[in-house]
Image 1 (tube, one colour):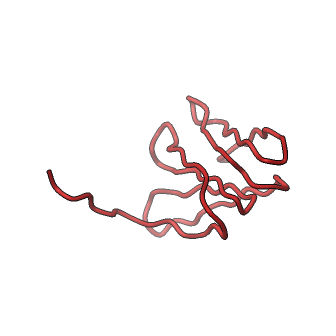
Image 2: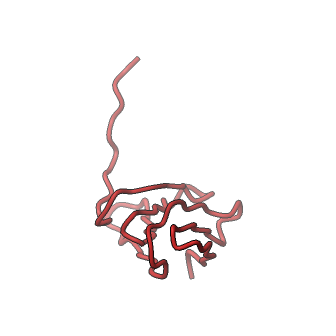
Length: 87
């Protein structure tokens, strides 16, 4: 068995990352963090990330809908939010 190979690190959160989820098409990765933000990382090289602002406390989880048209997040602020990840 071979050692794992790091493909690409994603940096942008200011606190610990609490969850990640691949989009159904595996073209993007969503992450949640204790910094109160969600991020969507485009998996194409040299692509920008998008930051979702709205929770007032740590975001504890994130997940794409099966079709990828929605994203749900849960937070310590006792809210669940639905987002449209792409335009």
